[in-house]
Amino acid sequence: MPIRLDSHDADFEQRFAALLAGKREASQEVGDVVANIIADVRARGDAAVVEWTNTFDKSDVAPATLRISDAEIEAEANRVGPEVVAALQTAHDRIRAHHAKQLPVDHIYQDHLGVTLGTRWTAVEAVGIYVPGGLASYPSSVLMNAVPAKVAGVERIAMVVPAPHGQLNPAVLAAARIAGVTEIYRVGGAQAVAALAYGTEHIARVDKIVGPGNAFVAAAKRQVFGQVGIDMIAGPSEVLVIADGSANPAWVAADLIAQAEHGAGAQSILVTTEKGLADAVAAEVERQLNLLPKQGIARDGWDEFGAIITVASLDAAVVLANRIASEHVELAIDDPQSLVPRIRHAGAIFLGHHTPEAIGDYVGGSNHVLPTARSARFASGLGVLDFVKRTSILGCDPSSLAALAEAAITLAEVEALDGHGRSISIRLNR
Ligand SMILES: NC(=O)c1ccc[n+]([C@@H]2O[C@H](COP(=O)([O-])OP(=O)(O)OC[C@H]3O[C@@H](n4cnc5c(N)ncnc54)[C@H](O)[C@@H]3O)[C@@H](O)[C@H]2O)c1
Ligand SMILES: N[C@H](CO)Cc1c[nH]c[nH+]1
Ligand SMILES: [Zn+2]
Image (tube, rainbow, N blue to C red; front, side):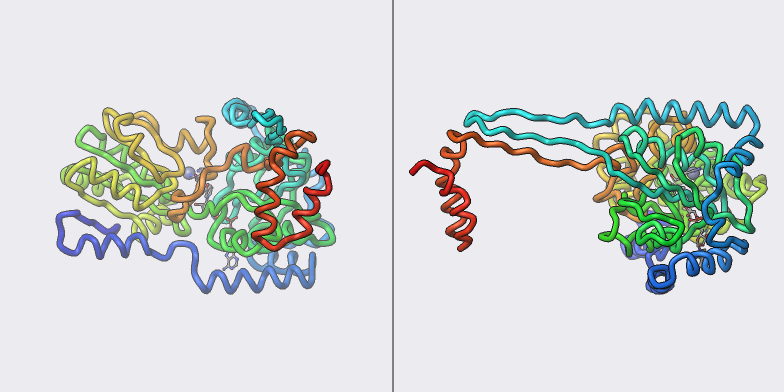
């Protein structure tokens, strides 16, 4: 059973703090396992990638078959039915349209001294996208990763995806084809992240790795940061539903289950002002769990990390939401806009009774790769800005250099960097 908390209870703070500290992704054990795998891939390249892959995924891959050939991509993708291709295309087009609005523009101007100043944006050259594939397959995550990269102008998009028992998911390959992914490898977990970061005989290194994954993937991204860029930590999925008496308990329960079924550390939390709704949702989750084919994973997720919290007011709910800093925040109230300005820490906000989070997972157009484990306090969801970088531009002419020289030379003296000062003064006609 999920934990039940009431903000009126004397031990509320203590139990809420325990909920926040719950061990869902970063752990010493996972970190140690991942460090070992990364070191092995650095030392032995493809041989290590293949061994770890065959161990964890129960597959039979060899160095020469790590990369999925164009012919195999074509054959697998062609097995996908037209209704799935149409749905992927709808999702692709909506994601593309939304992300195109995020493209930043160069800005160059001259200030009052005549100094040229500016910002120029260029795309990252080579990106690795991680598409999860252990417990479920995520064609939608292919689009969420690859489309913003394409919009940004990334030339090389190398996708890694695990193939448990050697099975590729045709819809994942169809999505990759639609999105214009340039190369695909049947490898996942920390070994995939290490190969992308350091390069192996068959997997060329990239400049940045993006995408969601389980605790091992999240830990690996943390550990290779610096060697390559990373987007954020998008680990096991989570949702926080804020609901009042206007909410439909069956709808709220369905949304809680939708995140719990991601399994492996996923977390679903309800914060409500109505004790009656809390009871009704708890009962409804039980009823709906029994209807799910993959009941086990969702039930484990709900039982292990789920929570129902009763609070005195929506104001109090907002305070808790900002402390939890969830990946997704659903506002199951009649006037969601009244709370939006006050939700400061959330990967994504879903407005009102008719916006289930799953619409954002697939076809809303916004990105579903979002910060988890409270990292929404400092990180944002994946977008075009993750695939570009800024270069500043600066230009002086003789008169603007002269106008700035004195202050610059003074600061060089303060820092005892005479060479800096001279590189300025040598240009002045004194
Ligand atoms: N935040 C987001 O945007 C977002 C989006 C989609 C999915 N997700 C999350 O991604 C995760 C997907 O997890 P998954 O497991 O299905 O797929 P995954 O691809 O992330 O992980 C599978 C890989 O984990 C590695 N692994 C498994 N057990 C291991 C062990 N004991 N030691 C070392 N490595 C091990 C294996 O290499 C395996 O191939 C879920 O937690 C889901 O919630 C998050
Ligand atoms: N809810 C997940 C994390 O945002 C994304 C996803 C993909 N497919 C289904 N759900
Ligand atoms: Zn989801």
